[in-house]
Length: 330
Image (cartoon, rainbow, N blue to C red; front, side, top):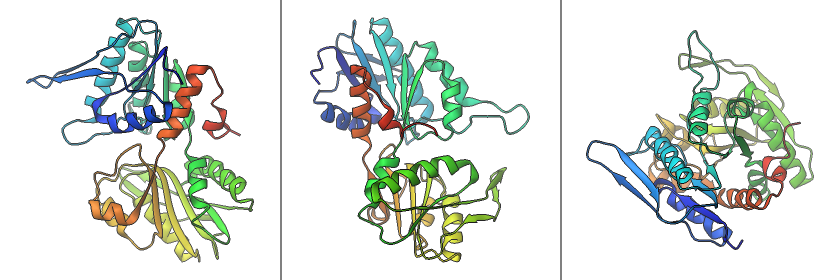
């Protein structure tokens, strides 16, 4: 990629990820400025000409010390607005972790549908496109945005990882019924990669006011390595329930896989639990909430920056993203 009419920015909180994307594209990150003011307000502006250019902005929307998810969202929106005011031809938000994507429907009376409100904010600053990976509910994400969206999937990356990890029979497990389609896409990717028949299973789960219930388990994991896949690991309780159920049903090994490692609450205890043979996540969120020694010992972190770089390349050149999107919905 020559970079003659493309600019890639990464806001400070996601600079390390942005540098990896830029390296894969063979371009340098665009220069920008971010300033914080004494009253908590902030501003961000490009330091190079964006007029008529195809601009991509990297910002992963997770909270951390000193910068909440709200801070990061507003910084991204204000920066996109500044780019549009600077006459950028098109601006694409590259969001490895899309905050607020879990609250995508009303589950109680007068509930907010926050995913739709966040979509409206992106549209308000004239964002042309939003690119993310493995959102909680794909249909809700696609329906919330009126601007263009591209949804990447890490299934192929996970399948490639497990080629050298597992032997013998395998079953892919969804920890709840809502994730069955996600698990099936990964199962198919793993079957293509291994040339084997891969089993499938899922566990019943109900959540109300933070309490998880449901014990029904559908599928056979006996004598198989069980790979439990979800979009994220938050407290880890959902993964742990499914892992124990797999062990009780005769699984020879249990691996936990999720694109986004949020790791809040008692997640450190869950990750340390020997019920898991391995825990695999990606770098959409650095595992900063876990003790460093635990993360080093127990976590495998896969890099999705090359996947995003390829998406940027194809969007800019008008290429197809189907291969990066898990082949689309069945």
